Length: 445
Ligand code: P71
Image (cartoon, rainbow, N blue to C red; front, side, top):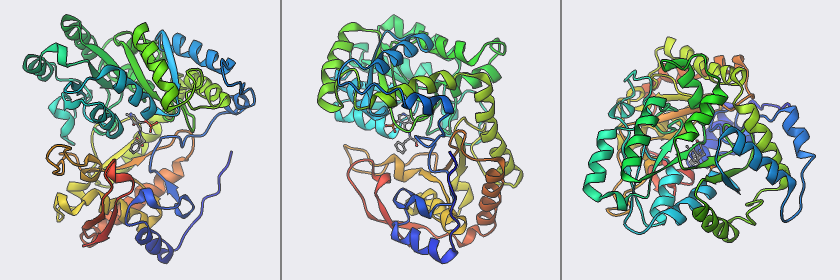
């Protein structure tokens, strides 16, 4: 499928971003030239996936596409039971509700916005146990997604294992810059949590990208296929939530996977409240078919080489131009360091938000704030969280853009960088209660 791109004038963009409250989530897609807001649901489906849509079995119950999806999940990921959901956060809701009791603590390798919110809504509290290097944009640690096992042990001592229903491990870590977890860390985590009978739940949203980094960077894995590494990662865990909108190359879909039959039955009962019957979970049969085929395509080595190769290309182009970005370059996008880019702004002037707005106004390129606005407020004290990372994410959809688009993007970011003193801070004039970054509105200071 070919989509036409629309060029806009500077005057049109100035008006569009003002009307959008300087929030790129509130722009109309039609007003965007190169859309690097997210890699979520924005990838291009293959011929095989489009054909799969035609095979949709839209029976209310027991669709054959569900059984195909279930078989693919068992074969490629190794989990016993799956429940489809409309997307990742639907699975997070189910998992949080069946696993978390009020007052529980859920450690994780850095927060993710929707994941943490569902943990909190279920009465739990998220605690970050990622290694310190993850919070440092300049650290060249090859596996910045790793869990700090000492931090985890301290947490277990403090609260007791019975207050920790599971640890949530993300592959790759989105908010750290798409940074992978190492196989060695997962194995060590398995040994530690087994001792304390704590479960490991994977956020496997970008697991194939994580597997590719293990193949490229971790000793002993260079000859292993992405597919076999994906399967091994899952083998160290007890279940997973999955947003099919990333790795699995679909526009919508996700699932919850579990090995425990009792928890699976509990979640199967809950899914009918929030999503739909347990054999479709809010998806059409055709969507489940496209996701099943996308999972198979996602673990191909040649696909992963091309996918992350394009991200690395953009990162190198930006680095050569002196743009401060998170290193090493991660799997799904380039994360520009807004604190370094705009040193004249305080964090409460929302530098990443301001930079994303400026990049749109200057070049029609849409990026996403991943800093203080995304971090939100502490639900107990009401204060802003002040994340160390104040980033603008240039996220690359899979199989959509060409190298020329990457070149245009690099040149556009450079132009904003050269005029960076002119970028002003913002003030928030409307703040929604949940996941504020989606709908908050701003005005120039
Ligand atoms: C991304 C998204 C989509 C998104 C979500 C929230 C704020 C802004 C953008 C979604 C993820 C994700 C991880 C690691 C769970 C979800 C939720 N990412 N875990 O990066 O990256 O999945 O969107 O299908 O509900 O733009 P969902």
